[in-house]
Structures are given as structure tokens and as C-alpha cells.
Length: 184
Length: 352
Image 1 (tube, each protein chain N blue to C red):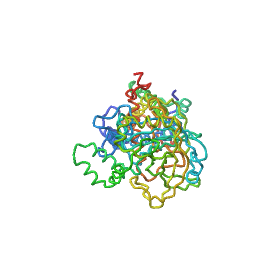
Image 2 (image 1 turned 135 degrees about the horizontal axis):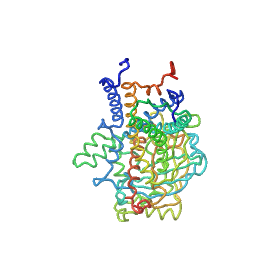
Image 3 (image 1 turned 45 degrees about the vertical axis):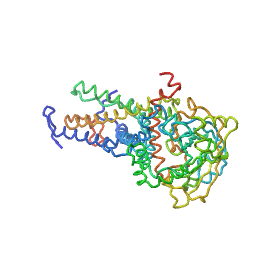
Image 4 (image 1 turned 90 degrees about the horizontal axis):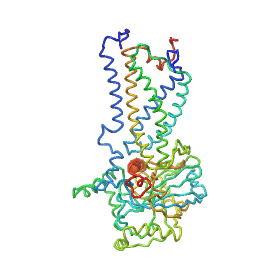
């Protein structure tokens, strides 16, 4: 799924940066809300649910764009282990972006909570009410959130490595700037 | 930043420092948000742990109001609530209810006569799928004014320091109003004879978007018959559950739901303060309890009666308790579902 383009398409870059903001916010909201009993708790929970569903929808759109447009090839001189890690990280991110909202939705369903997005708008339950299922999904949601954040830190470290140390065009492939002098 | 195209062979410290700094700052911000750098923060974990008896929590059970019995029934709205709230639950009609009578104790095996506070949890579902969950108690006011105060009450009552309660009351004089109720209010021999109060205030939002600060109560149709605690202690450890089971199987039991509307200036943020008795009261419908079921494998077992599960048309107010309760109830629910195998005799337990 590579393309001869040197950069991701504009819609792909837009989605990447939009989702970066959403996902980072989501992780901070999640870890913050479970640590407080102040009224902030409710505000954060009320953002967490619709934002999670928004990320799910955006991730599915992004997956379609990725399948349709592909991704620019990594630099040919990149060592194989780094290439492998780079490719693997893509799969991990897609799995987490799609999996985490579904796990959260399933976890609420298994606990018989209504999944309220806003006002009277709510989603249907997707799993039967069962304590063991809720416990499993809750633990998955909790630990995967920390894993997600750790992967994002590695992702940031890796892209800074590409930009600041190798300066090999990998950062530019997803850079948010609009295409002046876009390499064709 | 270095602009010259660098040779990948030459090692430069600058970029490595930048990378470490970016990652480090992000990790610290995350840790701060998680509360790991703020040991003073009152977390749901601390609150729930403070509820546990000295021997630790009863695994698989709710961390508070641990002893209870399920029921099913209906809420029949008379339509009068619609002037105050656009929630569909107040439109004239009959809606299914799942609920739970319970005792305010962390011990699921407590003797019924030993527990001063009795409660009810209800979940009303309307045909559009919206839910209204509420957990109420029979006390007319809450013991303290703030969630922090409640945490201090739990800590003081669990403390070995003989002066801990004295110190607590000095810091929270509002607790004496609750003590006066606990000492003087008559006991009854039935869940069906209790009045249950939301204590927390919420906001009703009407069709025009206007908000009305309110509290609500379930007022029993049954006549309360005072019984002395000594007499109750002779009735066996589960007399409340046996009594309500027999009573409901003989005939459904009813409560009128009354909504009390605050006047401007009434203490909406403090459930320790009763509102004056002359406040406008609107009867909005009738709760009918039709069938009692044991909690074990019963319809209420896996429901968290989180008071912030509200339909559109009801929201939280400036009362800080519903948020604190929601956070703590969620923690309790996550713990007990992970311990479901410890709950006696459930299908989940049997499989282990």
C-alpha cells in the first residue's frame, strides 16, 4: 500500500493532525476523570463518550483513505528494523484508534449503562450485560490507554529522530503545512 | 535549530536533548493529570477505600449500601412534571422500573435492625431508551455538606484515635443535625413505610429551556408504624427483606413522587440543609413496586444506580455530590464486577 507520492494526501494529513488533537485530549481526559470526584468528573465523562465515538468515525474514514491513497514509501536507506517498527506501529495505531472506542462502548453496554452522546441522543447497547465481560473490557480499556499514550510518545520521539537527526523527509510526508514547493 | 544538512554519521547532542525533553514533558503532564504527582487529591479510589470496614471490603458487593434486595415495578407519571421538565418520563404514561431496597452499610451481612439508614435505588426507562437513575435514602438531610467532609467522616469513624469523631464534629458542626435525626427519628419495620429523599438538588429543564432547581422524594402510601430498635432486633437479621417480600406478594406497594421546587436563595449546593417546608411541591407520579426478587441473579444486581444517569430535561446542579457519587459508584462497580466470582451463588461465580 505505498504510493509514488512523497507526502500523504491533504485529507490524510488533515485527519492525522485532527485526530492527534482528539486522541491526546481523549487520553488526558480519561486519565484525569478517573482521578477526581469534583464536578469536573462529569464534564470530562460527558466529553469522553462523544469524542470517543468521533474518533471511531474519523479512524474508519482514515482507514478507507489509507487503503485508497496508500502511504509514501519510507526512505530506502532506513535500516530494516526501523522500517519494521515503523510499519508495525501503523497497524498498532489503527487497531487502537478503532479498538479503544469499541471497547469503551462495549464496556458501557456490558455494564448496562446508557451510552449517552449528548442530550437525548444515545447509542444502542452492543453487548449483553455481564459482569465478567465488563471487567475484561474495563481492564482492556484502562491498560490499552496507557499503552496508547506510550506508543504516541514513541511515535513523537521517532518522528523527531527522522526530522532532527536524519532529516530524511519522513516528517514532511505528514507535516501539517499546505503544499508550497510540494515535492512531486 | 541546525539548518545545515547534517551527516547522519556525526552525532549531535542537541536533537537528542530536544527529543528527550519533548517526551519527558509530555509524560510528566500525563502523570500530573492522572494525579500521580498529587497525593493530596481526593480520588474515587480513596473515597471507596474509606468506605471499607476494617477487615477490607466485601468482595463482589457494592462498596456501600451493600445489602439489598431487587424489585420491579412501574412509574406512572401523571403529566404534572412536564411543566417543570421536558424529560419524557414526566409525560403522562407508565414506564418500567427496576430498583433495589438497601441498607446504608458496607457489610452485605449486616443485621437489618443495626442499620440506621435505609435506601432505594430506581431506574426508570422511557420508550425512547432514555434512563433516569436515582439512589435515595430515608434521612431528610445528608450527614455532611461536602464530598470532602464525607471522606473525613469516613476516615474519622474508621480511626483508632478515640478523639477522632470529636475532632471531626468540631470541623463539621453540620453533622450534629444529622445525628439529631439519627437519634430521634422513629424506626419502622418495613422498607414500604419509609420516605426516600434525593437529598441532592438537580435542575429540571422545561420545554422553554428554563431551569428549576429541585429535589424529590418518594412518599410512601403505607402508614409508617414506629417500632423500637429493641423490638426490631428481635425480628431476625433479614426481617426487612422477608417483610417486603411478603408485603409486595400480598399487594403492590406505592409511593408518590413529590418534586420540591427551590426558592431563589435556597441552599441547592448543600444536601445537609433542608429547604423550608413551605416550598412548592408538585406530585409528578406514582412508583408501584410489583415484585420483589432476591439480589442474587436479580434484575438490579448488575445496575449501578448512578444518580447522574439522567434523561434530557434533568441535569446536575451546583450540588457537588452527584459528581462525587458518580465517580465513586463507578469505581465500586468496576471493582465488584471484577470480583463477581466472590459474589455468592451467581452464574458467574458458579463457573469459576
